[in-house]
Amino acid sequence: MHRQNFKSLLEKTAIYAKMGSWEIDFEKEEIYWSKVTKLIHEVDEDYQCDFENIWSFYKDPYSLKLIKDSFNKAIHHNIEYDIKVKITTAKSKNIWVRAIGIPEFEDGKCVSIYGLFQNIDKEERKQEHLHKQLQITNDVLKNTSIGIAFLDKRGLIKNTNDGFCQILGYSCEAIEGTYFNEYINKKDLQSFLQGFNKLKEGKIKTYTTEKNLKHKNGNTLHIHLVLTVIRDINGRILNFLAQVIDLSAQYESKQKLTSYLDITTDQNHRLVNFAHIVSHNLKSHSGNLSMLLELMHSDYPELEENELIPLFEQSVDNLSETINHLNEVAAMQNTDKKNIESLNLLYYIEKTLENISALIKSENAHIQTEVDHQLKVQAIPAYLESILLNLLTNAIKYRKPETELKIKIIAKEIDNLISLEVIDNGLGMDLNKIGEKLFGMYKTFHQHKDSRGIGLFITKNQIEALGGSIQVESEINKGSNFKVFLKNGTRV
Image 1: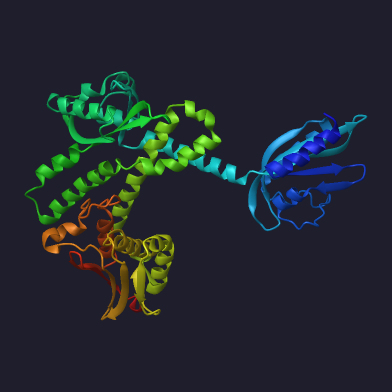
Image 2: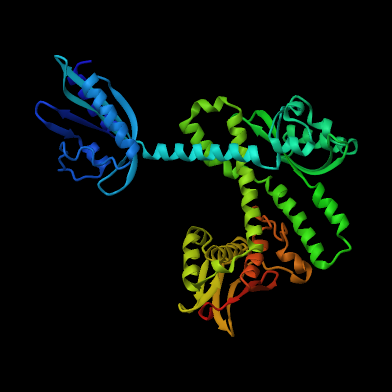
């Protein structure tokens, strides 16, 4: 291709692909940057690059070495390059670019070099995120104590993690190639097959159950099983994902500790709740897959043919959500007082309202705030944000249809405490009927598609971890008033 034709092609490429061209003429000692190249480097349109500052945009040591080595090979050995490097723009923004260099030689000497710059920062950031997620997936599947097994349409175990093999007491080599139902006790076998068939036929999306499995040593294992179907982009079944949690220790502890002191019983309930947090939330998986699936389809289309990648992604997202809940609950029981700060209440209320402004607007909610700007509470920032977010989104979520939603936020000082009230005119609740179940784990009292029964449980535990308390007043079809009492932040 003639040089003139190539330059014409570069100009058209710049227009359609937003690529910038560049050229260095060694005979004239001139450096040319196109308009798009200058935009990528965030310099003024009249900026003139010279030989003294040509490398000044490469602050990253690896990128600087790579571009210099590639450039020197081009001008000394007539070797073209096409590399990815990180530059620091004139506005101190770090971005990834694709740099292409094509040397031009005459009589064995490089007289010029020209090429392209392309901003690929968005794509590289996506790729970095995908690599990170894949690494997390691999680590979680390999190291988690939760048993993971991939089954084919017949229930044949194709692949497992170490956790699954450890639960059953076999080596992974011994388990893979056997049928899952071989490890289920006879009394549970029929109900398992019925659930498995319903899943295959599409009658249910997730099969969640508690079963008894047979350990290699003959012992009976009490496990919580979550079985989900994994389909390809056309909806065809690829595999089944079985997630197994061994509850044997918890159930044995529950039986032995029923006659112990109240505190011991409470600890046992925490173990059971722990198991249910892990197992119950494994049902909720599809929402967290969309971003990774989008990245995979756009950046790695060839991976669509690899069955393991979508399986791994689906598994890690489910497990990540469960682990997040576990970490929250565990953290609340071991709150370090050193992390408690004196926080301006109004600031965090306004911050929360700003974060949910789109939801407020879409629901046409009227928010009235009566909070003195000097009020402070003793709290952990993340806890206070979570408490406010749960109370406000609940007020919006459980609004009364066909009625203008009104929410009032009131805060005042009472003795050594700060009282915070979130009042709404929503559906309300029958507290005589609900009683202590209101703040229980996985307890829902309205038929709302987003109800999970975890929000108020976490909110109450966070408030109590901060040394506070929460009360509720509510009537059906009249609304609710959640009253939170936190320690006064001006008296730390």
